[in-house]
Length: 191
Image 1 (cartoon, helix red, strand yellow):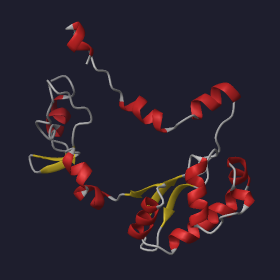
Image 2: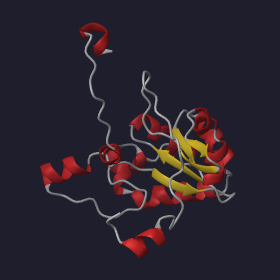
Image 3: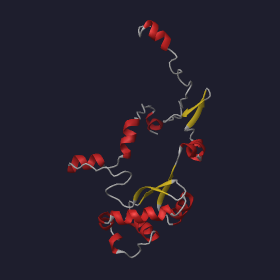
Image 4: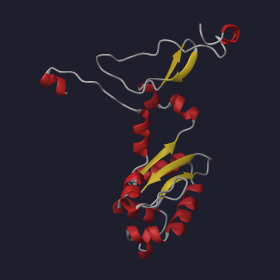
């Protein structure tokens, strides 16, 4: 948009490393400001509960996040703890993490992924499916974004960044395994 006003383009520098680093959330800030390392907790986080990836009755998984008190209150009510003062506040939920996580596990274990997601949508709480590769292959969002492309008969991930004026393309699938092996073994790396 800046180029519309300044008539100057600019380099778009997008790093996969920094993009993935952002997924870690506040871990670096906590480390630098408090000198604390988050313990290994699987898909849980120390500063919100319930939150994580849970297995459903059909063997599929859902990811749930209750990062605000209003969403947490709806989920706490959903799993049967309405009116329980232990879960009324952020600090209370953290202090009683094991109890609420166990009940969340039990609640989801008795429902299919589709049922759980429908109920979470009804109560306006954050939840999403954990997709398998088979799910991704036909997921409308992935399909629309061409996240999977077929190049020379080989399906593979599509482009990460897209630019409007120079959209880019994957033009070939790369060399076959050991395609240059005989030449390298015969002549070394100098050719």
